[in-house]
Length: 307
Image 1: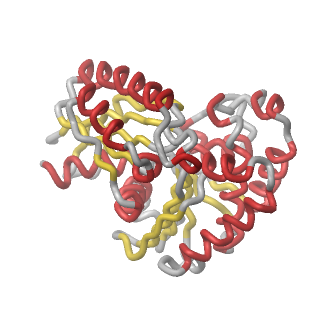
Image 2: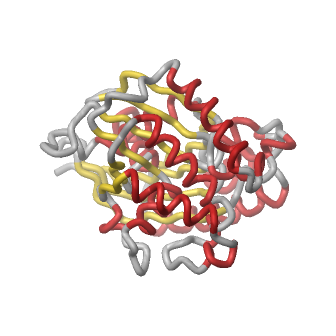
């Protein structure tokens, strides 16, 4: 067995995440060594100002310094850093790029929405191929802070589209105005449907923190349990119940939910509304939740494209 030890970083609008893993390309296996997430809210105010805020940059750089230590401790020699929606939209993204380069020694790649979608698809579906229950074609959606990526495919991507709906962006645009959110989400789904067929897939797969948090609530978990959430199947009606509860709850009530990360308390309602709208639009009776996502896709891309 020939293993490659790699590190992958996914820097989004709301969080920055690290995966250090040993990959076996011949067996198609990923052996996870370290996986962690920090809420940095890099996209704070970007939708309104068009710029990355100084305090958001400093939170992100602090997380990068921590991750640099973790990568060094594990002895990973290859790292890919992918940045998504917030840094793609910002006028001052060079400030972000220079800071990351100074700390981690690599150039952060501000990928296109289409490439982001392909990485998400690879990470989410690599272990599903061959399943007798969770059959292709797969419609994968990665519900982030600033954008949501839709990807349709079997063993490869057939169609992909990124649209500007995410838990942070919807919250900053509309506050608690759910009617305005619903209208905005509908417009974005109409746009996505121009490129990606949103109905007809055999399996709907949801990724990222909003989806996994809603799943954990739906499963009534006392603590966040990765193994219980990964590949759980959540019925549409249960997602609707959780979304209704989250939108009606106060900030304090949401914060008291055992599986709720503090950094998601103020944006989880909007995120759940996006999730529910996607399920309703696709006609899916259930959602398959994956803890493997763009981060795993980034790790695989290091071996596939740079071995």
